[in-house]
Structures are given as structure tokens and as C-alpha cells.
Length: 429
Image (cartoon, rainbow, N blue to C red):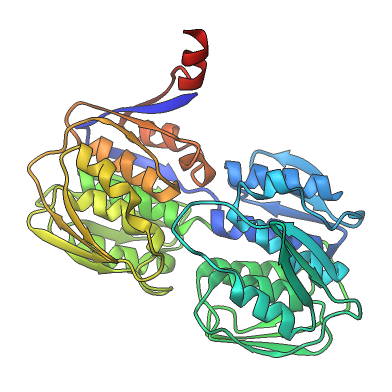
């Protein structure tokens, strides 16, 4: 087993490049099921969620080639298996995109209930509503989602009862090859939804309105292969921006789309960071006081829930009391007890957390409760006096490529070390 050891106190300086967007990659890879022929996908992040998805795709019969560290070629023309392996599916939330893709092309899908980070109840009722509106029969039994449409899918007007990124993408995937024009109303607007639509359009789909709350998908007879590059990761960029704001310094974050970062930039500027936008980079500097702010997470273009833990970590040393309202996921505050181990003063009441700035954090053994909480623990470790040991790093590596090496390149004192597995220790004793 491995953990991260972080000695805090160093300001961050230098340049870092952001990898491809995790949330786009884990939807675009299943979307390749819809393509008849090889499609080359560039700027693919080297993260464990991508590795898991590629293994699942191979099990289904896809031919996958690694072109280089960030480019893969996927050919799904010989897929014959529409049942995804349960043990692999349960490790990753985005596996549910295979339902829409398999249903759209083969009119049948059998996929285990998805896994991923535990933020409380995350129902897939809006996904099911969309599939059924397109003419599919959907059953959930024995831990599997069974979806079928013997006579194919037909276009429909679908209104989402809640704004759902996953449902928006899944319905879009299922309707690409359906007969007629499907209209998705109250659709989510996140950048990775636009990226998935752009990927499908580059392969021959006819999707309009992605990035707005009404998406129109006119079904086509088939998709052909091509080449597509995934957008930069908004949340990875935001994590480095939050880290530089938290500990101070001056860093240039390259390979970003500044427009996607505006909601993050606004809050970090309030906190005292000076942020310069360039064509495909942002520069973040902070040498003065770290100010308190209030934050409410909202669907894009609001402040992203995936940046909430990182900013809470930074606000632990802010001058004053901050209030964070989490309006997207319940139970997102599991990580708060870990920050308290380091000396943070945080009170949680339902969806609201009150963070009282303290004079210092002290290094301690902590764990990554989930992907973004793990990033928050790393930022807290960079801010703290002494050494912080972060365990359960597999959550972090689900979504951040080379995170230790990237922070180290900015001057952070951080390393990955091995440590004994507790079960192995018991057996040895």
C-alpha cells in the first residue's frame, strides 16, 4: 500500500500543465461504442478511472491500442458482448454511460449498478426516465440495470426533473442513433457535456444546443471513426489554483480554457489571489492576506461541487469565518473530520459548513474519503506545519494524473511512500 507524505510550509512557484478532463474522458470512452470503426482519442488523462473503463471495454470486445501516453485508439466494431462485468463496473461511477451507448447501438445493455465516490444517494431515475421515453424497457434487479428496445429507439421530448450531468449525457448517447429528433430540456450545461457532444458530432452525429438547457439530437444512421482531443480538466486546474491561493506563491497553469474557470477564479480572487488570464493558461499569485468568503455550489456555470472541498481546506487559514452551502450532493462533508485532526475549526449543519479561520494547521495522519476530498487533504498538508500523511490515495488517483510529480515540480515537499497493509501486519503477527 502507498500513501502521500507532505511536509508543509513551501510556497508554490513555477509552471504546471493540466491533463485531459476526467469527466469528459469517462464519458467519451463509452461513447466510442456508438462509432463504427476506429476512433483516435487524444489528451486522455492517465488516471485509474480511465484504466478501469478501458478494461471494461476490452471485456466487451473492443479493440484498444495505446498510441502514446495520452492517445488511444478504440475500435468497437467487433463488440459482441453487451453485459458489462460487475466487479469492474462497481469501481467507477461513470460506468453507467455504457448503458446509453450499448442501448443506442445494440438496443440492449446489462450493466451493474455503478460505484465511485460515496456522496450519499445518487439515483439514476432521470437516466431511466430518458431511456423509457425513447422506447426502452428498463429493469433493475440483482444489482444490474437491464435495458432493452427490441424494435430500436425512437426520438422523444424529455424534460429532466432535476439538472443532471449524468442523465443529460446518457440520454444524448442513447438518442444519437434513434429515429427522429430527441429534445432534452432542463439539460445540464457543464463543459464536459459540450465535449461529449463535440466528440459525437466529429464522428457524424447531429447534436445542437450542448452547453444550453435545451439539447436537440437528430438521429443518424451511423457514426464513422475519426480523431478527437479531449478538453483540459477544469477541476484539476482549479485544484492547482486553490493550492497556490492557499499556500501562497506564483504559478502558471498551462493547457486550460480560462472561460471554464471563471466561477473558480471569481472566488479565489475574493480570497486574495491575483489571477491573470492568457489564451490557454492562468497565472495565480498570492502573497497577502487570505480572506474569508461564502460559497454555494451550483450546476455550471455556478461554483462546482467538485471544487468545494479544496476551497474549504484553503479557508481553514483564512482571516475570518466562511460559510459553504453544498446544494448538489448530500453527505459531501465526510472529509471535515480529517481536517479537524489537523486543527481546523469547522461546524457542519446539514448542507452548510461554517469554517472559522485558525492561526495554523498541524500535520497529521489523514485519509482521502473520496476523490476531491483527497485533493483537499493534499492542500491542507501543503499549508500545515510538520508532516501530513494521506492514506487511501487510490481515490485521488482516480482523477488526478501525476499529482505528486506535478506538485513536486512546483516546489512542494511531497512524496509517495509504501507502508504495510494492516491486514498483512495482523497475519504476520
